[in-house]
Image (cartoon, rainbow, N blue to C red; front, top):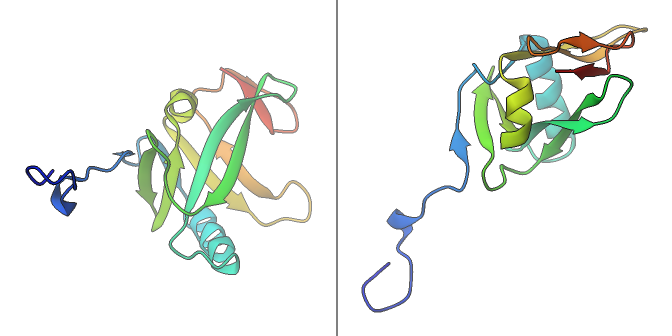
Length: 130
């Protein structure tokens, strides 16, 4: 704050998110290309990929991915393969060490998560338990 004015100076503003590294989540080149293409198509080339874990699916937990403009408060921000990825603190407990890939195939294609924390996963690969 500038003394007595009640106005915050630009140098005292701290980001409300934390910066992490690829030990949290890593994208393959194929996944990065696909995310970049989707962000560009949506008109937000400076956007981020949000990776979250929510309750549901046949194994109890499932991944949720979304494209957003930027990180929210308390998020972890990771840059991997040139793409900014954000993860909320609760989801970070489940995805730490994961690798996100993208497979282009007629059947069984799309984004795939290789998660070392998954104790079991369902046969379709869309949900897991930890």
